[in-house]
Image (cartoon, rainbow, N blue to C red; front, side, top):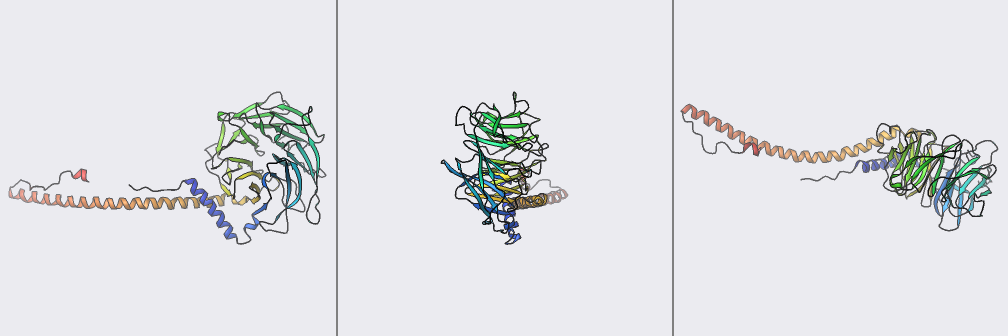
Length: 453
């Protein structure tokens, strides 16, 4: 018996994607990769991050990143790209930095793009804070940051329960929602810097909140394992649209802004991302299980209703095409990006939808996702995949065919030997029948011919 170790399709796919990526960079020449990926190295672990929605005259890219240091003193940095440099490691630079108490649980730029509107950056941690970032930069490309407000929804104390996340309302940028470990969600009026309403959203800690496309509907997830949907016009009631198996905590939720029927979430220490359809509550319409480590972040494509990116501890950011999920399970991603460490966060730029940012270890990395990289590159990737697969299967089948060929040759020789004996026996019988002697010679026919063959 011969045993053949054939790689799994998933292993072959990842290998093919990595080889395709390396080959593409090599073919592009020394200038190729510089146009596709930029890396900024911080003096601390990068956790929270957010793309600015505004086009900035002095920088084609502008992001905010937050430190993760297990102490009171942390910082937030505003990162710009030098428009005159394509160096992959030195093009991104720190344009501003300010102190922040405790690590930020989330960063988010205001979606208000109206002329004259302040360029606000919100952060959550122990409180909700609003910061104003200047649009102008000095000769060295530096910006100024001013703290606008520290918002506390606890009217009876100067302290409030830590905030786990928040989301801006894109349809009405004066509205911002926060969630907390005290089971509540608070809707804020940014203009008046005061809470509009506060509600008990879950039975346990609330971990994330996301607004749908439009002004009034938002959803939240928490430690009770449920996804709950709310309407600002009627907060007396909520709808539980999904509960995780065994009520495992749900950590993050992302709403598809191109098709608001779909939500994405994932469970604590889970390798799968769950896709929900609010029209079909209680069940997952798809589960994306391509990671080998725990999922940490998920982001819908801002320009497509059927593409989503997931990132995990396995150092991979996977892009999925969900256009066929109603017909058949989505089993494999269409693209895979490999980092050099576990990916803590992932953001897809809404102002420049060809670009994705990831945070791992002390690195911020931004990479271009080619709009034209879709079908042609995917076809090439899967051609490589099946070339690997065919090669492995060909080797396996060649070995098996070689073995079978030897066996067939052995059987053929045995059959030829027996046919010769049969032919000889037939001739003897014919000769003796002419002589009138009908007795057969001993051992003229070998018993068990059929069993031997």
